[in-house]
Image (cartoon, rainbow, N blue to C red):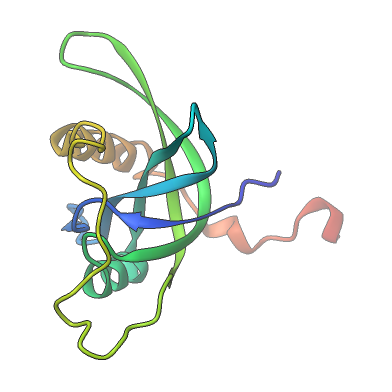
Length: 158
């Protein structure tokens, strides 16, 4: 099946790099992406949660900050979870496989960045404790998976 998404926008908050219990780098951030059309004469902005792993996570954390233009390529994933009140929730996010600079760096641009969306435009902050609990649960689910047969030929390759 095809699950590929490309999106370009500005980073809403400085990307947060953390490490799993297995010391795997993971970076979470949100991209603000304006739609190509207006609703009632107003520009509409979508806020898209993203997560990157390993070298991609470290690259994003090192080279991007709030307000920076970024292009990401990855796959869309949906996660179901339960909040503190027992309500079932669903979250869509991009699992980033590659990240690219969306604008060239100009002379004297070390301190200046293009204006970022205001916090008033942003969705509520991501519950990082919940994300870490979700990540720990996923690690438990895949802890005993044997990937030894990953290089075995597919049925159509035989």
